[in-house]
Length: 254
Image 1 (cartoon, rainbow, N blue to C red):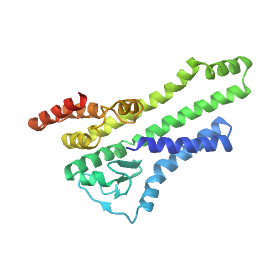
Image 2: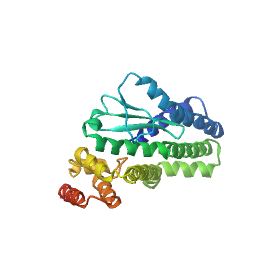
Image 3: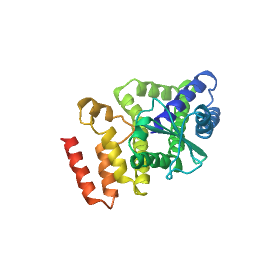
């Protein structure tokens, strides 16, 4: 779990900068680059400073240069800040209470986010979108009458509104793809079954309810049952355990 934290921070920062200080699209691009540098490079160190007095978790699966802190209020979640330039992970009590194997599986998932710099790529995507929006806004304010008429029509019709959702859906697809990549990072290191057990314990129980199905349409993660299925395919050993988990998944789906 890390993508949405960066997306929210980045969008708030871009909105403030764009609306209050910067109007030229090229200057906006420079500002966006600086904002990326702050979020990706500075945030993990800021988090380390904020939680410097919290309990630091040690695990053999986490590189020594990626500190892990226990933070109240995070529950059964884990959050990664940063990427290849430096990363920090925070976890809740639920992750620790799950046991060593499941804890390490979750931590490897987060290490996968950091090692592959998923936050950086999603931030670059958001920056590209904002630059495009900046050019379109510039076109609407100083372009020809035909371009102004087109943009006005596009923003005020059902078709135009639907088109506006396309970047959001693409962003959601990218984020889910990165979540799968992080899952597979843990699976390749022998923690597929442990990660499945964690997901079933904390995430899958309520997934078949109608309100969860609606929420999951816009969730940053793939469906828990879907995650468990591809993790099962990635695991090689423990056939008996795989059978037990498969039965559990069938029960959740029904």
